[in-house]
Image (tube, rainbow, N blue to C red; front, side):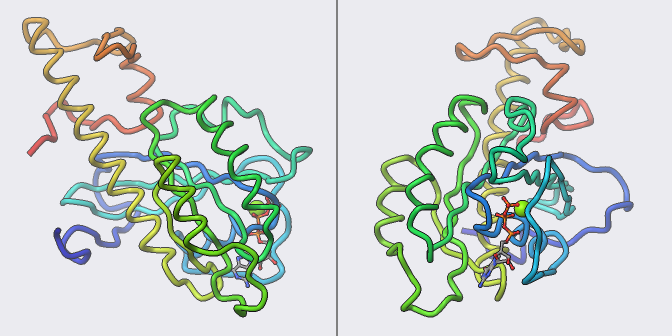
Length: 239
Ligand SMILES: Nc1nc2c(ncn2[C@@H]2O[C@H](COP(=O)(O)OP(=O)(O)OP(=O)(O)O)[C@@H](O)[C@H]2O)c(=O)[nH]1
Ligand SMILES: [Mg+2]
């Protein structure tokens, strides 16, 4: 395993080219701390009196991963049904997702299964999903969900799991970076497969909008390039 400092670094938004844009969606019940987790990761900010999100917002942070410039574009919407935006558009092109619950409110954990179902219904099959138990800073007496119960659930569902605190910042960086690293691995594999498919087609190269069929999945090359993570140059990123 490579040390975190060797593979990750802060990057200015305007310096040079971005190699990848990774769309990540954050979901979970209202007031679990989705917006504050985003604020902590993208700006190292936290607000105790944050208001419910209305509609959709996204924030970005550019960093380098394995010497590639990656822009994490993290989408946030309302946990409350009445404030939520169109579901399918929210999930479209998401390479990663965070399902957040509040460790001091059991109901928010019980609803995780519904959020995971919604994700599975709308997001791509290869979307990397992490379960985050937020507000880990709260006193032990307030806890309503044990960490090992959540870890077991996550394992059954094939999700990454971590408790975190947007307030103290504990584990926030690590949780997002683990997700981004895993997306990076998925995207590198996908780029390899696309390259392979191109070679099979006599090195012609796929034009934007051309549809390639890979391992049973139909990928619209044009829309992937637009919305998610294909490398901008035509070089293979597989090293
Ligand atoms: N103690 C503690 N409070 C937190 C933490 N994260 C968020 N909060 C508080 O919880 C409340 C809700 O946080 P938000 O980030 O607005 O929640 P949300 O999930 O975005 O809610 P919606 O936008 O309504 O879906 C705010 O008062 C936050 O200050 C945390 O890690 N610890
Ligand atoms: Mg919010």
